[in-house]
Each structure stands twice: as C-alpha cells, then as structure tokens.
Length: 456
Image (cartoon, rainbow, N blue to C red; front, side, top):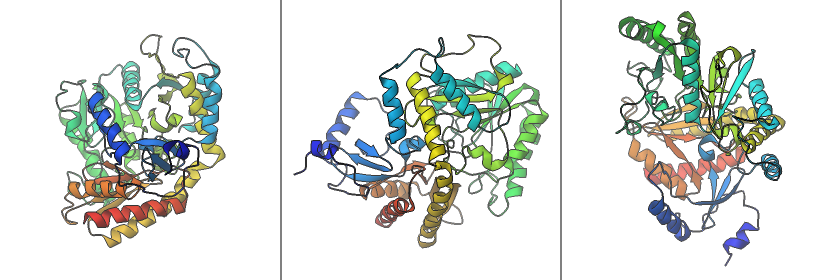
C-alpha cells in the first residue's frame, strides 16, 4: 500500500482521483481535533488538504481534487507557483520581518510601486499595506474621513467588506454576520445594488438594465439624499464592482458611470473593494476596468501575495494622511509578503495570466450555460472572466432560492473530486486559478454535473 510519505515524494497527479470516500479516516481525525481546539468560524467542506500544485489539491487520505475555489480567490496563480515559491524561499534566508510601518526596506517600496503601476488611474498614487481585506477597508474608511472631514458613508445591500466593527457596518450580505454584534460603526446607510437577477424593484435587469440602474440612482438621489442623509455629510461610497459574498452579482455595465456622477457632484469619494475581484480574476487586472471608472481608493487583499497574508489600499496621492501616526499596524508590508506580491505580479505578466483568465472564462461560461440548458434548477449563470457563479432556484418565475439543493450540489461535487464554495442565497462560485487549462475546466465541470445529478 502506498504510504503518505511515498505520496509526498511523487508529483501530484493532474487528474481527479478519489481513493476513499471523503472525508476519509485521516481527514476525520484532523477534523475532530480542529473542532476540539479551534473556535467556530466559516468551515464549508470537510476537506483536509495535505499538499497542492496548480489547480490540484491532495488531501490527507490521498484523494486528489480539482480546485475551483483557489483558497477563496487567493491563489490566482495556482498553488505553490514555482516562481513565487522561489522568490519567497530566497527571501526567507535573508530577512523575515522588519516592521515596514516604522522602518524601511526596498522590497516594500518596490511592491508599492508595482501596485501603483497596475491599478486603474493615470495619476500619482500612494499605498498603505495591511494584512487582510477587512483591514484594507478599515484603512480606506480612515482615509476618506481624514480627507473629506466627513463622517457618513453609503454602502450597498448585498455587499461584503469584512467582519470588524468598522467594515461590518458596510457588510450586508447575510444576517449572521451582524448577529449579536450591534452596535457597529455608526454613520453607514445602505442602498439597493442593481442586482439584475434579484432586486427589490422586481425588475429583470438582464432585459431592462437601464431601468434597473435608473431606479437605483433615483433611490440614492431622491430617497436617501433627498429625505434623510445630507450628501454633504457623506465621505464616500464603498462598493464592490462585483459583489462577492452577496452572490457574484455583476451590475449593468453603465451603473458605475452613473454612480460616479453622483459621487463627483457632491465632493465624495468612490471606494472600490477589489479584494475578491482583483488581480486578474475577471479577465482584466481589476474588475472596475470593465465598467470604465477609476476609483479614488481601491481596497486589495486575497490574491495580492498568493497566500502570504497581505492587504493594501491604493489611493490618489493627494489622499495621503496629512501626518504620521493617524494609522499604522505591525505586519503591514511585511518583507516576505512584499516579495510575494512583487513575484505574483511579475508572474502574472510574464505568463499572461489575465489574458488566459479572459479566454478560459469564456470557455467556463459556455460549459456552465450548457448545464443551465440541461437542468431547470439552475436559474442563472453570471460572472466575468474566471469569476463565475451558478444560482439554483426552486422556480424560474419567482427565482426563489434553492439553498438546500445548492448545498447538496456543493457537497456531492466535493465527493466527486471538485472543490467549490457557496455564495449568496443559493449560488455556487466558480473561481479556479487563472492559469487553468480548458481541459482542467472540463474535468471540474464534469464533476459538477455529477454533483447536480446526484442532488436532484
């Protein structure tokens, strides 16, 4: 019998291989230990990873899976990318940490320069490094307050921006995120997001995108600003170009241009949360590029350093803090993370990962639409590039979410060798690495279809 040690010495097979029905005996032991010693969080599937490469993950029982989750859109260049790994290994032998918030090193400045070069906007930029998407949004809030001298903000229903008390004030994708944590930061009001598939107005946004956008804009101007929120009190809008935890919702393409008109007319700031949608995920370096707008502040994390914990905000240089000490942290711009960030960007450019995401995104969407044609339970297929989702419904007319079916499909697909993550009320997000091949996509979609059939 092949041992775990022997498996470690051989390359991971680039195909699905289920040796024992997951979770296997080794996985169950670790899950039991996890449940004993770790606090409850957001565990999804009972997969216990042992090693990974590219878009394949091997668990502790020797099962091999295709990864359509990418560590929640973190390992956009695939697991253990050789160039990024080599850069981090080299740095490990030189310097691990030197508090880039208080001292200096070239690696942090280089990463900041490269982020300024790839983010939207042809103007001078400044970067503040953090450790996560939540912290990035917290920093963005402070920048907006400091610059505008205003204290209120507008967020969107369905948005997700983190779970700390400040970012939580904007998060509006699931009630559980708020349960027991009130009061959070005051001063945030929410307005509808132009969700083409499900929105408070009952408009089919795919057939009538302009009507949906106009309704949201009217809501902001006539009802929010016109009745109880003075626009001169508002520092800015915090919004995802594509809602992530809210269901991978893509708004009509003209929405952000109309929103930017409101923002500029009132001297406010447009803060775009690209934590999940950035770094090539949508077939462009940043999702906001699809919509023809340039944010004043952009929040980043997840794929920024390929799994080394890191986040950042990139702002117009005139938005820099007016004095030192207004905001800081210990690990932001950590030297290892900075090296990983630079290596990630370089690898993406050298290997044309963004272009491949656009190309393979078309192939993935084609395959998902084929499933929609075959199964009435799939109500919607949406997304851009390799940021796609399928939404399960009980009825096509009412579009009532089929959450139990979605959960079953996620689990049955996992048992067939595919790693997925749910999102929104009844959707499954599909976010494989950007360097995935069409053959690997087909392999995953076949496992997904098996999961659908087993759940019906």
